[in-house]
Amino acid sequence: MIRSDFLGIIEEYESQLKKYGLNLKYKIMLNIDGHLLEWPLAGNHPRGLAFTESRELRWDNKEAGVYYWTGTLSPHQQTINELIVDNLLTKIRFLEKSYHTLDCGMGVLNSAVKAIEAKDRYTRGHSDRVAALSLKIAGTLHEAGLLDREFSNRDIEIAAKLHDIGKIGISELILTKTGALTMPEIQHIRQHPAMGAVILTPLSIFEHLIPAIRHHHERFDGNGYPDGLRGSEIPLISRIISVADTFDALTSNRPYRKAMDPPTALAEIRRVRGTQLDPDIVGAFLSIPDNRFLPLTLSS
Image (cartoon, rainbow, N blue to C red; front, side):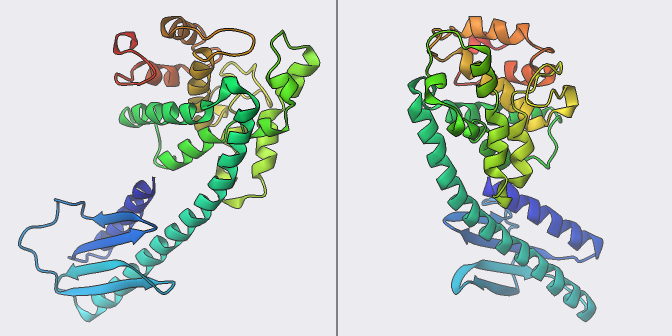
């Protein structure tokens, strides 16, 4: 996910070069917390090009990488280039700090997710599976032009992994109950999306993902919870997670029922398409040809 954010920064930088008419060839090589990043991508460097200038990248008393460039620039253009390169490096440094903060936060929250799943043996691994399937759905949507750039794979993965974080406030007796839930118990367990939003509110790095987590149990027809949103009112990431969450729930053993086999689960997904689940997201889900959760013969 850090690579996609890095490439987004590079894309913005290149638009600045174009805006100011700077005829510049460059190469950047970075090591951010063990992530080796470079542009152009390995194997795509211009052949026979000798870079005439370079700038060692260091911050926080450590080597971060090297920036190489060549080009004929006037003194005025050289000044402009230095300014936009400084802007590029500032954004890359901010990206590194964001990922370090994010990694620390995710470490704590992942521990909380594991604690939740440890309370209920039927849901162990559920969040990781929902995240993996959500990413596959997102990839299909992106290929079809239905997913905006504003949604990174990192955002989708984190929101999916944390979608049930609010269950830390749900009684273990209710989570593991083998019989039918009473209405008060149903109302209690339906509080977990809102609880998840409350838990994440103090963590500013997750602020943009709170709506996705709060609304992952909304229904496309408006009959979901906690706020009864419908259709496009529901955040797109929530709609993606909802499909992945539903399929994993159907194909997992639960205290009150055995897991459905894949064909039965797929039939149920198709049945609630357009009522519980966004029809476009379901379509993307059903079109995944190499989904490790589905035999190839079951893709529609």
